[in-house]
Image (tube, rainbow, N blue to C red; front, top):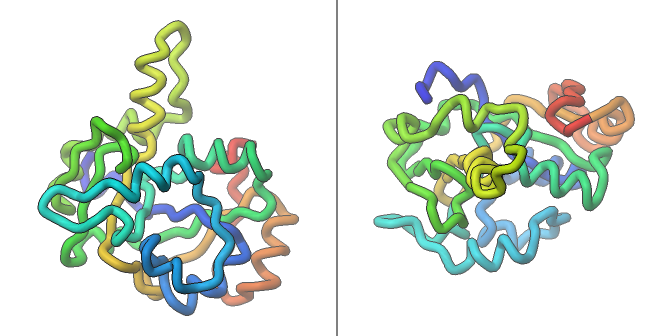
Length: 199
């Protein structure tokens, strides 16, 4: 993947969290723990992330994590467990790739097979076709499906937090979700994009 292949990065969250995010930024797991928020995190994945440290860097829970592609396996699992009308994908400026200490993860950062690299040079380790694919399923090849499902969750890891001024807008799944987000964050630019939410 090249830098010019990216127009934005994504952060999946509950609509209820957006006002706080616009005030405090997108926080690392550790920093978010001190603020009231509605988590969409899966406990089993957070257990793995809690035990992981970025080589030459910091514990994984000290990074705010963004996705190269918000239409990924995590979004699908969250949507299937709680629906999508309460979810938003925040659009984040790709300029965060140039911030000090930013790290790229070639797949889900909790994976046993992930590779970490300094940003933005590490983009070359991420396969564009794999990460931006419309699906990670592989008929009759379960191993390929597992690998693709992890790779489509490639991450951009930002130390501590992503400042609010890097947030460019939000995607929601439908008009109902748009109304819900407008009610709590009237100033944010909102686009309905059903595809990102597997509709």
